[in-house]
Image (cartoon, rainbow, N blue to C red; front, top):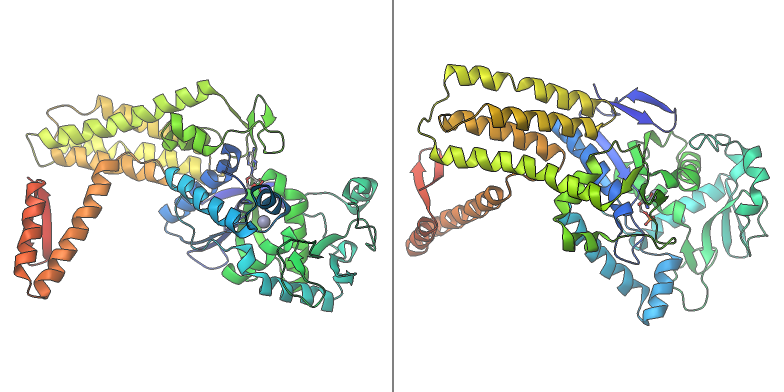
Length: 469
Ligand code: AMP
Ligand code: ZN
């Protein structure tokens, strides 16, 4: 049973999917006007790990995460550089994807772009107007916050508290609002800004409506998990709930998950404070696997302070795991015995304990810190319970066990082999295609090329098998 902390109830709750065996999950993605910093990387790594654990447990995960590609900051950057806003966002989406690949973040099922979903947003805003939850003033559309009775249920704020702080919410030029608590759904363009047609004005959507619409379009009106950094609880996620639940007449997301901040010198790392490090900078010094390991060494709801010391400790920790895997591979290659012995069977069975510990940690609100500790226990066990005398089969089973747990954390311990296996499979497929086309010269050439690389092919009744020479 997986338990997760739900910001909505402020409690750990058992995860019960809406549809058996399936998880529908939406994670708010970055605004793309710069290289991402390692604070932005925290939700990416954390929620990718959540997804991987669900998959490990047999769930089919539909994982949607947007890019906010229309925003004041993007427009500002475009003006500074004298290029289009589109050019800025496309550039930084591509750069962000490179960083994500380096951090071994699985590609989302879908990465919707706000600019490609404007039509749906306009429709949703119209629905809100029709239902009395929104109104238009001089081309701007506002959400009528007080009309939504549950407003504040996620951030646990009540409207009166918000009212006393309303000065902060009053933005210049928005004094035409019926109530200071109302927020923008659509705003008219200013000169030189990108815009879209709408019944109210040429303009663009507010930030909150983007996620309500994209989540609905790609996951449906109700989803299992909605996630992001804790700064998004209010107002972003609170407003998303108000919009989606008023428009669709249904509970929006069942579980709301929020990661704590990544700090530096115990202050939030952010672009506005200027105290950030980009993922790209870190990649010049470390393999991004080290960054991933660093992020997972803390529980996602605990603040994490970035420091050079912790990064070094993470590098060493990761090395310990990778070395154990390398040793297993080396011994496998040189093993004198093939088949596992009875004593080794027993020794292998004892490693169940570490898998149990790993799963218990992950079941408990994705406690990756404890899960990493379980992996270290397994590593220690492997190091003390294998030798030159071990059989290849025993070593292989241990390697598979270690690799499987590391894979949940998105840590690659078997890099070379994986790449190679993929390439070999591809060449075998090409050879099969050549044979089918009766191009035997090409088929033989591929076989010889593989042989030169130390790969032997065997044609068996079950298909082509390969092994290392
Ligand atoms: P933004 O591009 O600012 O909208 O942020 C994208 C995602 O990164 C959001 O989920 C934020 O909550 C998250 N985020 C931004 N800064 C930090 C930080 N210092 N620590 C953790 N998460 C952050
Ligand atoms: Zn969002």
